[in-house]
Length: 471
Image (cartoon, rainbow, N blue to C red):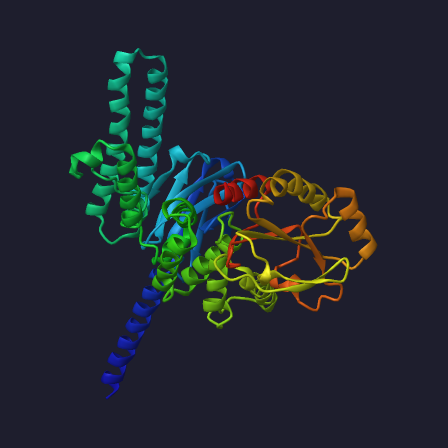
């Protein structure tokens, strides 16, 4: 019995040692030595989307040595050894987080790494990439000074550098499959259409060829970038990749963009961090977009993910702002029938917006003391309205304030009496909400059925669009 107890005690002790060792091995232990940083405090920092944050700190000793360590693993991603804004270098942190980094200073090209294959290989790749950049710079100089006969050969050499780079990525992917190193490098690869596979009539037509290239890039843009992988949040790669896709790869029109954006968000929803980043990104980009009609995407995203309660990260302050924006934007989206208004003229006569019979109607909302309005309104009146008033253009001009004398004085000064001038002193019609009069001037161009076809355009843009419709 006693012997069994001794054996059990030994077993428990060994098990404790094993568990302790296993727990320690699951943490990170990064031994650092930087010769020029003796007795300095150095930071271990990580990328997160487009920012850099501190993960750990260590006070180096008189030899420039110290260790970052913890019994928990760090998220895999791109990290930085940081002293100050002029002294730092990057490294990739993969699954193995116990290794050493040594450097004579903070120059990236002299870093030495031992003990973690992914980190070592990334360091080797970084040096290869720097050499490739030097070769490219040398070739560019030679091309600038070369004769026409020499340029073709030099240009071919330059293109071969891209092939070498792509081959490097593919070799790493083959050698270390399923590692973050392989995913990180291959994320930079975007396949290019092999033009020779296309019919001759497309190859020989620049416009058709451009369309085929556009369609191919759109279809294959994410082939080697797994945007559902949370580790890419800890790199500077994801945001610019997403930015390019949203603003350049997708056809810049609301109906074309919407299905791709929602598919992207639904694909990343199982990962809360990426779901938060992607949804927030698209929401902000859509409301600030210069693309006509993209505010409709903001409304869709707000109602689907924020007002429904799915955006778990949204603060009450941000939700208040989102609700306000939806309230003001949704009634006047392009493609909708403009909210009807019946407003009073200077003489007390009432005019109904939907009863105006014209090919085009411009709803113009302004205040005379607004600096932009002082320029916009008379410029539009003189340069656009006068040209098209007898060709099918009518203007429903709403004075947005409550001082009648100020209004009449402005109408007299600018001689604006030959279009429809109305106001709503008590704001009974709620036109300021229905037409988002949080700033002035506000303009909405309506077709003959009073459907909104454009808004927020400059005088020049309005002149061009109205000319297309009425000339």
